[in-house]
Length: 299
Image 1 (cartoon, rainbow, N blue to C red):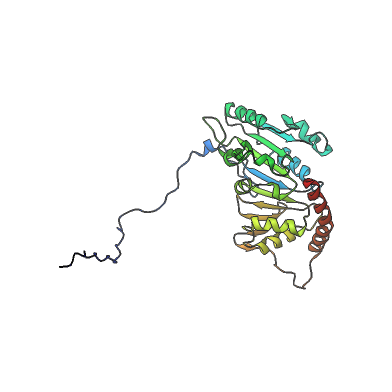
Image 2: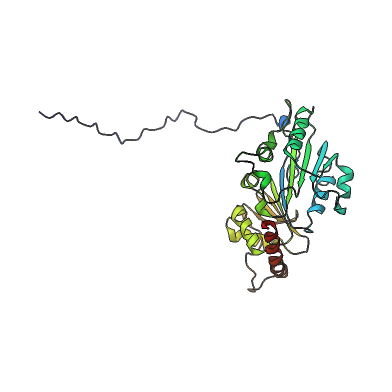
């Protein structure tokens, strides 16, 4: 007599779903007033945002910041309190109007300063928004790393949308200006509302951007084509809206959206247009300077 036990056969027949069950995913109802971001400013970002601005010296970053945060055409009247943290705040003549308009200006960044500012925001009553601009305080990335722990600036980047008091969220907007794309860690990149790519960069630097930002153009090559087409005039910039999933030359000319490119991907004559020729020349001119700067950082 065998002691082996018979193994029951699996029933491979699939059960039919109960047609009467409701399996749809429904959106959560949220009180928009508490989110404090009710202003429609399309195609630019909503007032509660994280702007990442990348550009070398004399690329137009300061001019952009003046326009975005002083002019009523953009965000000039959207903030109750404006704060500038910049090591060169008093050395750049272009900053004159920022210094006149902003409520607080600091030349040095520290976690203690940031902690104090956040406490002020949390204690502030009402729905008045705050703006903090971090201008060139990030260099080799050390402000994002601290003994294996997440530093306060990184924590802020991930939670800024929810900063507020007991009655209102969305009381803080951030603009962060850096000279190199590599200075922005993945956490900052993943939480950005929009990018401003200012001035010209070597092909190697554009390639780094394309690897991280190929959501615009769908491929690395697609992003590089968008970048090239955004360069026509000396101070053109590439505006990448994560919020709206659009790429624009300045704020005006739509270059790409989720429907695809808004320009011919390749010049019909097989030659580069004037803007792309200028870009290639500027890239070559910048390669040596870029290498010199990177060697200086390592020294």
